[in-house]
Length: 141
Length: 135
Image 1 (spheres, rainbow over the protein chains, first blue to last red):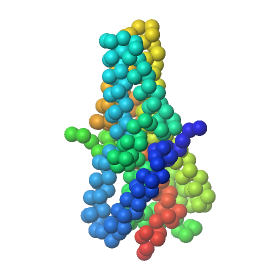
Image 2: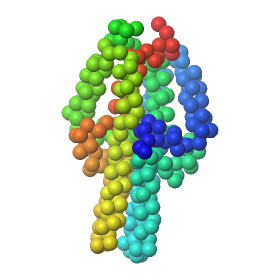
Image 3: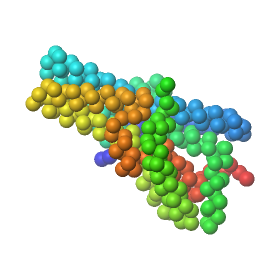
Image 4: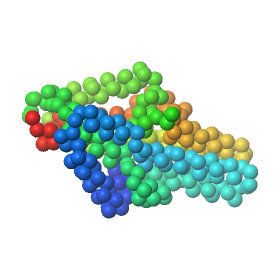
C-alpha cells in the first residue's frame, strides 16, 4: 500500500512525538493570535527556511549511497551491501514513508512538511488570508 | 547561500512553468468556489495523496541508484551512475536544482507548497478558518 503524502512521516513516528508536535503548533497559534501582521509575516518567513525531514533525508541518503558506491568501486564488491541498503531504504521512504533514521530525526525535533504546513495555514488564517477566498463562497455560506 | 526549504524548487524552475502551475491552482479554486462542500472534501482527499516534487525525486533517485548498483555487475563503471545521481540529490537538498527537476516540473509535478496553496484556498472556501478569524 502506498501511504498518503500528507501522512507518510507522521504514520512512521511515535504517537508521543506526533502529539508533542501537534501541541507545539497549537501553542504557536495561541501565541500568534492577535499578533501584528508584521510578526505573522516574520514567523511565516521563518517557517519557509525550516528544514523538513524530507530535506534532511535528501542530504543524508545520497551521501551514504555515494560513499557506498565509492567503497564498492575501490575496495571490492563486499561493500555493495551499504549502498544497496541505503538505496533500498530510500525507496521504502518514498513509497511507505518509513526510514531508519526517521525516529532519530523526529526525536531531534525535525518536523514533517505537513506539520509545517499546518502551522502555516493557521498563521495565514490569523493574518486573514482566507478572506480573499471567502468572497467566492457566498453561494453556500 | 542556502535557499529556503520552501522556495528552493520554485527558484530553480523556469518562470513560465511556475506561472502555469499557479494559474492552474487559481483556475481550480475558481471552479470549486461555486461547488458543494462534498466536492471540496473529495478534492482535499486527492491533494493529500498527490505526490509532491520531493517524494518524486527521492523515489526516482532511489531507483536510479539501484539500477547503477545492479548494472555494476556488468562493469564497475556503472557505479558512476549511482555516484553521479547521489551528487545531484545532494545538490537538490542544499541548493534546490537537479537534472530531473526540469522534467518533473514540466510534467506538472508540484511542490508541497503549491499543493498547500490549493489546499488552504479550498479549506477557506469550506469555511474551516471562520472560528479562528471572526469578523
